[in-house]
Image 1 (tube, rainbow, N blue to C red):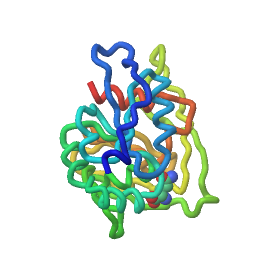
Image 2: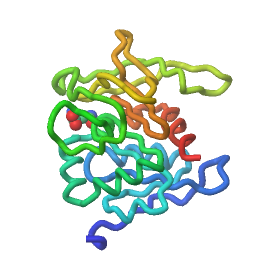
Image 3: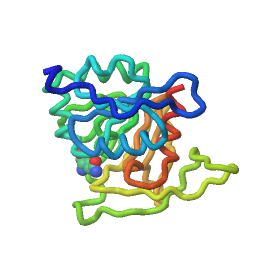
Image 4: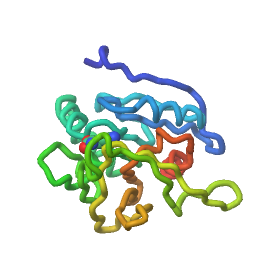
Length: 213
Ligand code: GLN
């Protein structure tokens, strides 16, 4: 198995301004992991496709991409990744985008394998079918760009979930104008209903990298 699914190292660069190069794993069981890889590599970050538990070793953080949360969950069970991911997430930064945010959640209102790491309840496919996918500009106060400005973040929602509620020490990072939660953070854990890896804006990836320090 290990031979069939080798760690795939895409680049060997350090993150500018950080002493040691950070290593970011991207769970590559299903979904748009390549898009995260591209955006991080453009930022000069080493990325590794993670499919097996031992590939989590030496990772400073992990991204769980968008895709299909039921498939990611079932594959994580088959690849014996559920417990290793839970253990990893207790000490490291993990960011779930769209399906990834569902996989991180404690409750998705249906029976499917979840990591249960974040105190969020999500509603899957909250905006309806594929044709109801949309793009919109979001206010995300935690994202700063040069000169302290904070332009709107162009966010892509594809059969997206909503974060129905947050609890414990989880904080809301962004909402739609009607107050529906679309981004949340609990310590080093991040969840976004949308896909920052599909925007040209790399601020959310930079924000995640700050959590690895
Ligand atoms: N609808 C998918 C799910 O429930 C998520 C879609 C996505 O990641 N773009 O898992």
